[in-house]
Image (cartoon, rainbow, N blue to C red; front, side, top):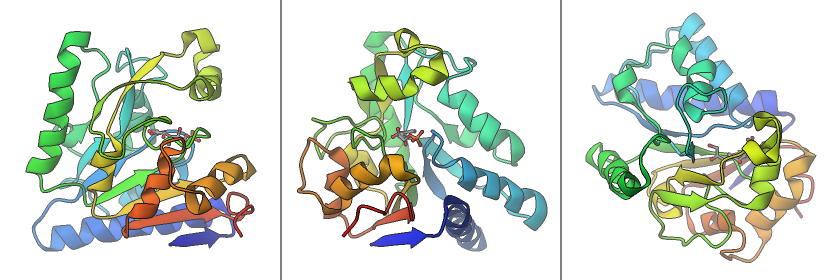
Length: 247
Ligand code: F6R
């Protein structure tokens, strides 16, 4: 299903409310919510609202476990552009989450240690009963996580090469494309698919063409997000601008 909101603020508040409801419902049963999280500009409003809910409405992250979708490779966690830095700045530093419950792919590994790390990432998610909810943005290549065109629908967490367009889009954050890493560690399409609920968010006119392809286009590895059409558990949450090319 597709939900279209007037603007990204109201959409972000609605998504945050769903996450908060999930966290509270798990807590009331003595269970832990397992969340799959994304970085980038798209989820910033969701995280801001979750911080507000924590600070003003008593939402606790004490029992919340998180797995981030991806991290650049190589990447030092304390670098300004790392997804570790992003997550702490936008969410984790402002809520009562236990650092031991935070999982983000490790951009500091030696190349020969990456495969074992990725397998372990999958096992950790499985051992916790799987992801209750996965939040996604979408890249202009149609990537989800960093699953670029050509990714297999059953792919798992792995080291990938970033698409040229993705590196262009990241060049501002890195002060030039030459500084953007060529690789990343990402959850796979298969990993994302196993989540019990998936919310893909997109805002602005810039995302309208890829949203049209993702929602209405033929399913194809050329646009990895089209694989989401196979799932009954996906919701596309859009603002008017991102939805503007849908028929
Ligand atoms: C981020 C991620 C990416 C982004 C996508 C959109 O963890 O996995 O798929 O969601 O590149 O990025 P923004 O939101 O910056 O437009």
